[in-house]
Amino acid sequence: MNRDIDTGRVIEEVRLRKCLWDASDIFYKNKDARLKAWNDIVIALFEDVQENEKNDL
Image (cartoon, rainbow, N blue to C red):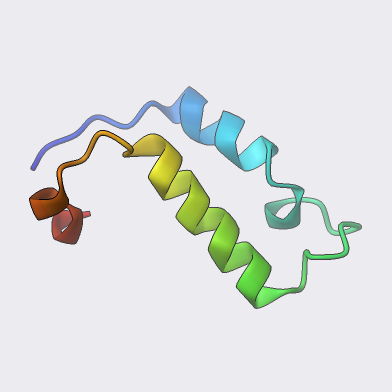
């Protein structure tokens, strides 16, 4: 599987999730919140991925 990642889109998705970059955010030090944020970003970026391709990500 060879997919090009749109860097601008990644930046947009990260900006939407302050817990990943804003040290004053109450969830910044919350590992579970950060993990969920990254999972949400993956879902947003690869929403068109077929079920059989998900293990390749």
